[in-house]
Amino acid sequence: MENIEKIEEKAVPEKKKRIFSAIQPSGQMTLGNYLGAIRNWVALQDEFECIYATANLHAITVRQDPKKLKENTTNLFALLIASGVDPEKCVFFHQSQVPAHAELSWVLSTYTQFGELSRMTQFKDKSAKHADNINAGLFTYPSLMAADILLYQADMVPVGADQKQHLELTRTIAERFNGVYGNTFVVPEPYITKTAARVMSLLDPSKKMSKSDTNTKSFILMVDEPATIMKKFRSAVTDSEASVRYAEGKDGINNLMEIYSACTGLNFEQIEDEFRGKGYGDFKTAVGEAVVAQLEPIQVRYKELLKDKKYLDELAQKGAESASKIAKRTIDKVYRKVGLVR
Image (cartoon, rainbow, N blue to C red):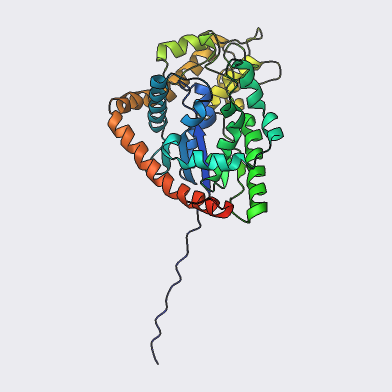
């Protein structure tokens, strides 16, 4: 009998879905940025094909000191790597290093309606804050954001409540373009991270933690010294009940419990058990210590990275080269479809 060699069929690995996300280099990141976004960037790298960027083109819709902007961009890049964003696992670069972002933004702005842009909440908010500089870039900002996402044919975009409106407009623009020229862009879906912590102000827990707050005790910076972190938590707003439990009307304690849960992995019931019979002083100290333990290794690595700016520049350039290869395929297709000479 003739021997027949059996060829085993090799399973083709399922293609990972692609995620795009970017953060503006607008100064130091807060604990809220870390627990609500940055930590999720790190976790997503193992499950998805991730493309991350510092959104420095977006930053100039507000007047910037050029030297400070460049410094902030490098610092953010270093801080994200120190936090666990791994250029070996993802594509990570500065937005301004890939000209296709600006190219596609212009094309997409001609497929974005004036009325759509005028309804954007962020434009209204920033116009109110910067009444002396309501520029066209601030108005067309969402077209650039759409270009950021569509340029990389992203399947999903991690979004918080304040970014849902922008993603909806991005989807509208993609569908409008596809409707005219045929299938060109992947229409991205929102990626809602279940583990994202919503961190509120330590002094006014009805508002999100923000570094733009005039009182520095209301927020924790990722680079704050341990002693500073402990001091800020000890002055955090609580209530008169002196009972560590998660409940309506206990916004200050609820916020601290959210932070403690995010840093320790304990659920609210476990936290309530741990601090049953103990006062708010003990609880605030424990929350501060948990945050210090979370941030200290990041701070050590961050300081190390900033000592070698050349290394950081090389990493960003390598990431930009990878991003440009993907972006070129999209921008070439778009130019061809709309009839532009390339």
